[in-house]
Image 1 (tube, rainbow, N blue to C red):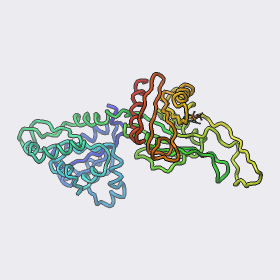
Image 2 (cartoon, helix red, strand yellow):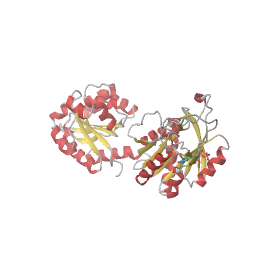
Image 3 (cartoon, rainbow, N blue to C red):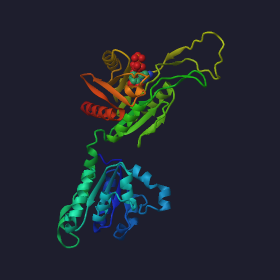
Image 4 (tube, rainbow, N blue to C red):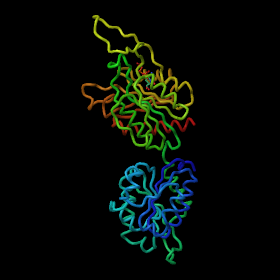
Amino acid sequence: MQTLLGKHIILGVTGGIAAYKCAELVRRLRDEGAEVRVVMTQSATEFVTPLTFQALSGHPVHTDLLDTEAEAAMGHIELARWADGILIAPATANMIGKLAQGIANDLLSTLCLATEAPIAVAPAMNHIMWSDNATQDNIATLKNRHIYIFGPAFGTQACGETGEGRMLETHELIEKLDSLFSHESLSNTRVLITAGPTYEAIDPVRFIGNRSSGRMGFAIAQAAIEAGAKVTLIAGPVNLQTPHKVERIDVESAHQMYQAVMSQVAEHDIFIATAAVADYSPIETHDQKLKKSEEMLSIHLHRNPDILAEVAAMNKLFSVGFAAETEHLQDNARKKLKSKQLDMIAANQVANMENPDEDTGFNSEYNALDVYWPEGYIQLEKARKTELARKLIELIAEHYKTKH
Ligand code: CTP
């Protein structure tokens, strides 16, 4: 099992006798390479002490929403964002009911509302409670909301009766949690992305730049995270929020972008170059602001290194380029695919600047892409950049896997 490696898992323990089995669960999760933080409800602490889970997880156990000390160390919103997944085991009928109703009156139920990570519950209760209509309705509600239900199993119960309601065994919970992540098309893959424009300084106040907003690259970074990848985003000057879990390195010039990419190449598997990198930069950058004097001013430029072509030539990373074209889209894209020895190139017609909302390309929310690879081609129709990014990431994942 590889998919739990490095995953951040919150184990939510609620008040049932099966709580004692979760000590072993923490150990096994850590054996699989996951980092585990345990959150207990008050009633869970009646069955097992927080100290047990603290010792096994290597982190203080969170029990209280209003604990100022714990909040100062890692606040509940931060904890909700930290998680790649939440597993509630054992999950009592009470906790299942609270989740179904959206009640947030303790730390664990609050985290479940505050997280964007997948949530799984492993019910454990008496078989009559499990088959009660109220519980079954709540379970149906959770399933509708894409909360995963692990178990329960049939067997003898702590109360001495036999029926459906036993919590799954530790190894079964681990397998199910693992499969929850393994559908991710880029799990265990490291993706390096460039985005935005570059600014090439003329003097301390002036530069040569371009109209790239960086939106497409940031949307691709977000989509790659959703697909389970580890993502490093090297961004030129843009006014965008870093997507959650993305490691961002800010640069200004093409040269800085080149250096940042080269320092990261060895740590990555896929390179997606969405940045609009300046092809040329001034030979000389003036230390002081240029004063107007002559009628004419010439600025001499020299070629910048082609970051994408250099990475592709190393033949180590699956390399994807972008081409923004104003004419001969297909011809130019195919030429770039070949000349830069790329695995894939996504080409788009640049936007009409006068009406960016209606259009596609640089400053627009929307884009449409023609994607080429050496043996084929697909048209991704006009859509929001976020949606298009997801489609492109799936296409990249498919081709990357075929190549490897
Ligand atoms: N690129 C790069 N480094 C550069 C220039 C471009 O990594 N110095 C990457 C871009 O991120 C993009 C692709 O190369 O993925 C664009 O190719 P390019 O041939 O540079 O496109 P244009 O700049 O549009 O080229 P031209 O002006 O010749 O059409």
